Length: 337
Ligand code: PEP
Ligand code: MN
Image (cartoon, rainbow, N blue to C red):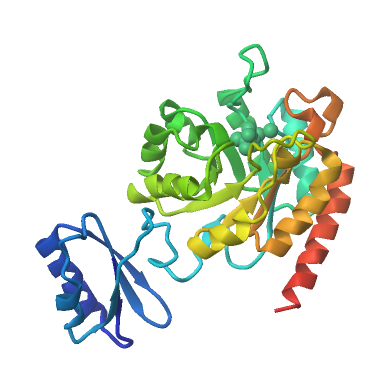
């Protein structure tokens, strides 16, 4: 349930009403202070809440029931876009952030070299997996803690904030200096992991599961947010369909749908969606046009010898060209506004 307060309502009056509602109905209150008005979002069992009685308060403009099961992630609870700031870079403010790097961190030279190249091409964030979710237990599993160290070294050298995947809540301490923690597609519904991430004060890049709906993705965001961590970035990375030409099918419509239903920033991963380097550019352009706040793209210095996902990685030279075209397209799109 959402209570819209009249413009000009003081913070004190809003706080008093919130306290009263908490006491009377045992609900949680999520306050959203917008430029136009203040909203009180009621979370919990709101069946007994008497909407008519609340409408009678002087400071109340309107009372609406929210049907969707996600509350904190819901745009109705927070009409303005959430902007997440990481090391001075903003995600969700209307800009298009490029996150680039290898699928896996493989060595100091590899991650450092790629970091310098993607930064020169315009990327604001460095990606690289240290803990890798692999289909085969015999495949490279990542450098694990050492991989995190190498990412931090690359950050120290370049100043680029780092994005890397967590697979177990047992590893949270190792991730304390990571700037954005990625939850991979395979763990999108690892609810115990999501609950633990909800206790952190750190941005979480939540990838849509391989076979999960938009609503399920928003419910996973809700798990993190309900724990208190509201810094969630949604990521569309392609879903499983009957199509086999591409590794997955990029659900481009998920971008405007996520933006309509939620205030959270949305990033698109064309690499895991396509599985093919030549598709990265058209999918990236489509994502920018659909309103994405960022792109996460795999880049490797030597794709044929990459220890994971070599088939879909761009080379740094390819990334140079594609990044320039994506950023030029973004400028052109902004000029339409
Ligand atoms: C990755 O980013 O390397 C990865 C494994 O992604 P996803 O979880 O989307 O498959
Ligand atoms: Mn990968």
